[in-house]
Image (cartoon, rainbow, N blue to C red; front, side):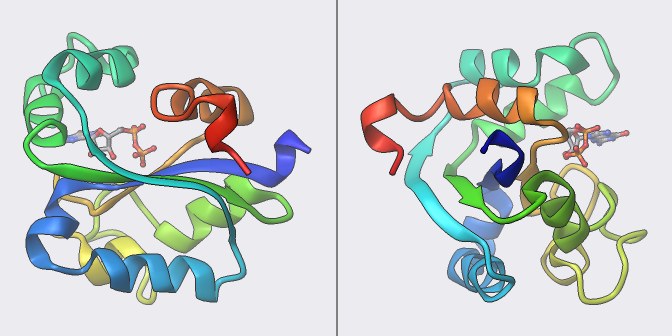
Length: 139
Ligand code: GDP
C-alpha cells in the first residue's frame, strides 16, 4: 500500500502568488486521490527538522526561512507508483530546468521558490507526513 502513497507540500510561494488551488487542481486532474489535506505553517524549528538532511549546505538557511515564512498545504496523495508519478508531475527541482507542462515549470520561479515538494521515497514520505498528520487525520 505504501508504494501507492506520497507526501507533498504546496509551498509558501504558491500561496503568495495565489496559485495554490490551481496546483491542487493539477494534482487531482492527474488522478491523485486525497488521503489527507491541511493548511498550516512550519515553525523555523520544524522546517529545519523537516529538511535536516540538507543541514550545513549553503542554501539551508534560505530554504528553512522561506518554508517557515508563510502557509503550506500538506497533502497525502494516492496513485499507483505515487512517488515516481508525482515527481514526474512536478518536474526538476530547478523550475528553469523543469520540463514544460510540469507544475514547477508552470508555477515555480527559482530552486528555492519551486512551488511544491514531493517525497523522494516511501520511507521519507511516511516520515514527512507524520510531521503534519495524526493517524486519525489520514483517510
Ligand atoms: P526536491 O526533492 O526536488 O525538492 O529536492 P531536494 O530534496 O534535493 O531539496 C529540497 C529543497 O531544497 C528543494 O525543493 C529546493 O527548494 C531546495 N534546494 C535543493 N537544492 C538547492 C540548491 O542547490 N539551491 C537552492 N537555493 N535550493 C535548493
